[in-house]
Length: 253
Image (cartoon, rainbow, N blue to C red):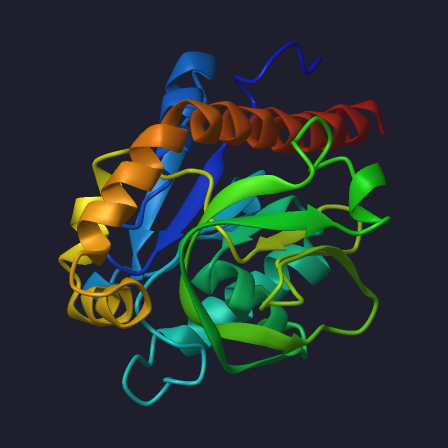
């Protein structure tokens, strides 16, 4: 059977809180007719058979990778990430917490770091400027940051793709098509208020930007909304092509 489009592509999304979902990527899925299944790990959902999926997205959340006692589902989640990336070798994208989980699951290190909260810029490394996932994205690029932990040591054989002034590991790749992004481009205008309703996020917002931090964040994201959507769509298209290329190669074997 020939891979004549995106109808053969099926995506698994792992979420850790309702409001940290694929955002703009959902519009892209709908436009392409790409089916996706969501696993709400924080609600106790089980992880399905991974072989049924061509791509995995792991989203952000207020949890930290080392909180396995408080969130026991982190253990099977990390095992699923390892299997998807190392055994199945299928395209993977982790965002924020998902980025940190990828690093941790594959032997890297995650620890508290300098908090980054607000619209900031990241810059690509030389490797990033020739990477397929980042192709066509601005460099430097304005992104939304909202994190206090960071990847402090990359897994073996990982490639650093982008950094910021306060966080060295903003993007990395492991193998041909497993990626972590510390920052957000998928965020829609309504997601700022939804995230600010999470107590841990609200506290970090006040600490970083002051009592008027939410208003400032809304304004900055509103001003960048068109560019964020464009960048998210570019990122999605690049990821989609990685998936489709793998499917074509698999069906040609």
